[in-house]
Image (cartoon, rainbow, N blue to C red; front, side, top):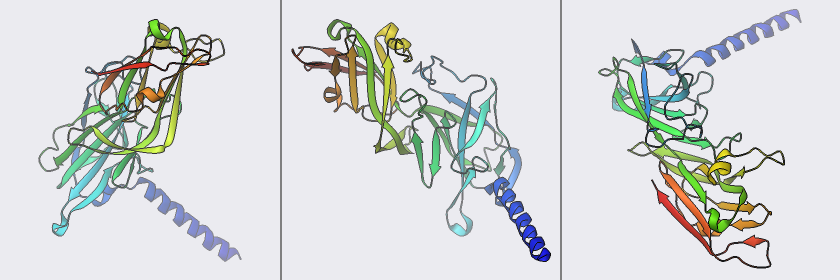
Length: 314
């Protein structure tokens, strides 16, 4: 009996050692590498589209920001193309390597080193928790903590020859992967609006076009709502934009807003969903969507229905 227990304990020790090796080994271990570490330089188009970093008004990366980067190595052993995931989160290959900004440089650990041959493709996303890599596609899910309120940046640097470019930082240019829509409420015709609700989709997958902007396939079984309140008298969080500018801003998965409802100070509903259902909002673009009202129906709790919608892309 003691011998059996001892044998089992040895097996468990071996198992845990193997598990530890599995969690620390990366594909770099089987690809010959140089002694040159891979460095990054990351920029974005925030100057072109301000007020986009999680909707907090910032226009540049700042100290303590972080992104995630996926790396894929391509080689041709025996003339046959072979693609291997090269850079990813240790212990969770569906996520990219977290790379942080210290105000000057982009840093990460453990360091990765340029392979001696082949090419590398890099893909980056911000925020660093935003995208998962599954097989040959990237997937994205809107966060629950701020529905329709978080932007997604996506960038790439592809076909980097490992033998010739290893001494230079990899330059990644990040673009906007969602559609940013500012919904402007015409006060003169709609009256005083106290609450706004916007619906869209929560999840989707994408591949990257040549210009870097994702081409989306939306999961239409994942609805998501965002509700904005002008006042907090019922314990609701006050939306400063609705309070001060009579508008709300959402970041949506292209190409549809699936619902738009407004309630005035008396609790009467104005439903603009039907009016906007055919509008398309493209990835990487900013839109100003102005809602105004014409005729008011009498003897009903619902207002509209002669709704006027004007959508302008910046």
